[in-house]
Length: 110
Image (tube, rainbow, N blue to C red; front, side):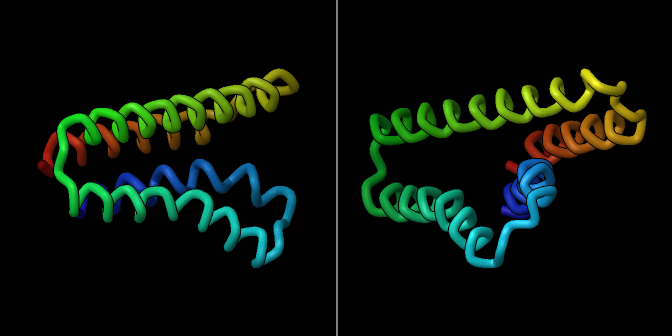
């Protein structure tokens, strides 16, 4: 559980950072949180009441697709930003450390 929380915090910061440039209102942030978080809550409820290998595969496949979409969108944003100027070493090292923490928490917390 702790690894999941740490992973979500590091992932959330990387996803929300580009949005903050536009200075969204609190209502927009709440709506984005609802859109991003509600499926996880609903999926956890469904999974807890109906343990099914078929549903597990389906929901994990949907989650995997969502993760790939986020990675793709962030990669496009980084590519657009770095086409004007190279990525600072601090940003690159921050991304690398975040990915390393994600991997470590995934390995250590089971």
